[in-house]
Length: 206
Image 1 (cartoon, helix red, strand yellow):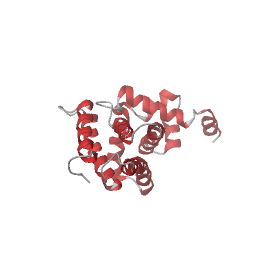
Image 2: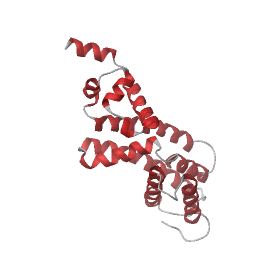
Image 3: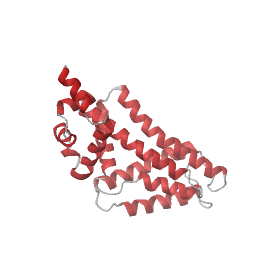
Image 4: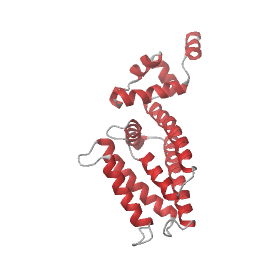
């Protein structure tokens, strides 16, 4: 017991562990992220990591939540800056879509989504909270654009649901490196969709 207590006192801050996990995913790929490898990276045993996180599933979910916290801060900065609603919507889309094949955040997302099939209610609630934050921000932005007359009148919640489904589908293609799909093309497709759906001419897509 005394040894475990000393290990806990000497362990790096939890955020450092999560940052190291994310860095390992970025540099080596998710398949190289084992508890033993992460332990070596932060100077802890795999047993102590399991003591803190309970399982690899929990470590991955905590790492995702940490990464999403950073993205959430960046999203808030983008959405509160000056500029038109469309400019900020484009910034939202740019932040949402992966940087490219094996984007570390999306690599982690896909793995956590896959593991969530057997997750408990608490884990599902935490994943839903992440999704909900992206959705609420998008709904608010679309509603603002409609109220200002920048966007064609649409149901902001319904439109946001459809837009995020489109973004998720395209983002998965980019993240897995589907041939014929890349970030530049995806941003072009989404931009055309927004022009047609929210512009001043043509039928509304909501």
